[in-house]
Length: 228
Image (tube, rainbow, N blue to C red; front, top):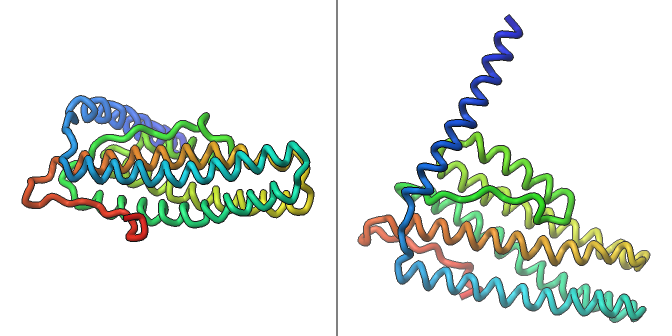
């Protein structure tokens, strides 16, 4: 009886996986909807805001890493602090936006498909493992709405993971400033960029879904007020 129950559970998982893959292929063929002018503008605004913030982060963290190699330790730490303050403002903005995206996804008749995250793009171990989980669960979720909401949930959680990781790295650098500790800064720059790019892709998918809503009911997700 126990073996039969185990076999049934495995069979159900396999069926869910196959059904999910087949549905995903069908949905990708069906979605060829262009963004509305308002949606295009909202996407451009988000892309510009994200790029502006990432430029500030890259400038601060890249220069901090260079100064560390030149053994200008205190200047490097000061720039690291500046980069941390930018991320400290940027990450909560992204988390709020992703939460809003999950909410808005419940207001559309049909959700545009999204691709699973790619674990190999992440350098921080916890984020890579999180992406692996998202990729696996993605295949067992049947509806595009569920896949979208789980994706944005993982991205939202990922920004929190990155903030905690950077805070820990910053404290370790203050205590030691060993070259090995500064490798964490490179990982943060890479993974912040990846999380941001994936968030923009999710935003685009949501706007595409909103474009399918009748014009009289068109919805536009606003960016956080201080990003306007």
